Length: 102
Image 1 (cartoon, rainbow, N blue to C red):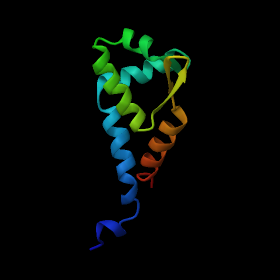
Image 2 (image 1 turned 45 degrees about the horizontal axis):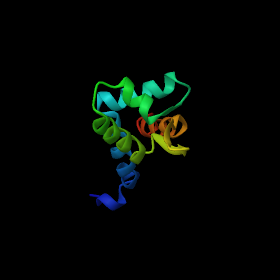
Image 3 (image 1 turned 90 degrees about the vertical axis):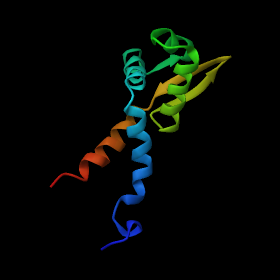
Image 4 (image 1 turned 90 degrees about the horizontal axis):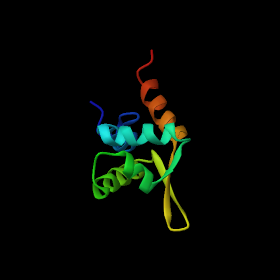
């Protein structure tokens, strides 16, 4: 039986775990949809204003999306701008689904 370090593709699962964990929460999916509906980028304040949570909770969700690579954050003056990284999301999901194609 192959050991885990010799199973093809097993090393990539950490990245997938982070993406799927980020996508597993409804609020984080709502943030991604909000970004998409607003041209792919939005300030942290506007995102928080659209969520039914406190700023602290929304900030935690944004951080998890950023750590998973699904969004990027930049500064514009004093404002944090969050940008959807749809290319990364599509790449990860395509790589995952490709494993199951015959």
